[in-house]
Length: 363
Image (cartoon, rainbow, N blue to C red; front, side, top):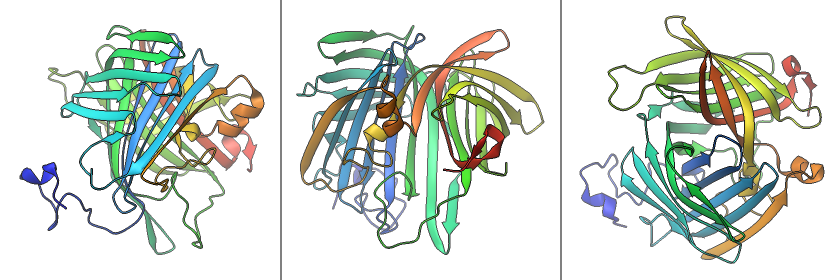
């Protein structure tokens, strides 16, 4: 099937843009962005997932107010024939300037949340190291990803209240990934899958006035890092080149009854051995399980729900039973400190199973 992208001279396979170069059902293209302020008043995580070999596109938004109440809307539709439109029910996504400006909208709906927001990148995108993994003969990950920091403008409505976003106070952190990913979406049936003894996953995007940073680490329960990717980058117009990060050291503290960070420190080690030490203090967060990561209340990314589907609900995050049900892969907006500099960003941190360094002995 031809799409508008086939007009451009940028084909990489001997087929149209309607197809990808594998028939793997798990091939996914995903964008996600996090809008947050300096105080923890609001944190909005929203994203879109496209699954060409499942004929599905879906979207979600999770808005947390004052760290207490999380509003959630999820939607899904059949992908074709509208293969080249990033619209799912009331959700829409428009690229205004590639690698720089993106507009996202959630039109009025019966679930009481809507927004019209625009991201503008303040620093160039960072391309992560390619992620590839095989498990017992099968490729379970073959993914590329880039990250970017910036500011946000627009508005968010929830239950009749309005939050105005401006570039002076709204920080945005986003990523875009594509490829085979067999974690977080529809589980495969009658296929053996990897259940690790334990491990740590952490990803973060950080922005200070004159520089930014990101990292992505995966660490086995015994301390072996299987992925250690990152960079330090500078605003548009700067003559400084990005610095590659090859090692990430971490020291996190957790709540006693749930594996959520209370404080954290990381050290980003460059190729020349230079260290950049950053402390993190959580401000607010969004629990992405509610948005469909790994599945929650009947919805998981990439699942077929028919031609047009949507639902919505809110969660009381002060209820420990609710938090224990929904907390896992959370995006936490943070205040950052590096020497005398103060910045803001977002952290993902999951410690699962056995991880003796932080006192965990199993699931």
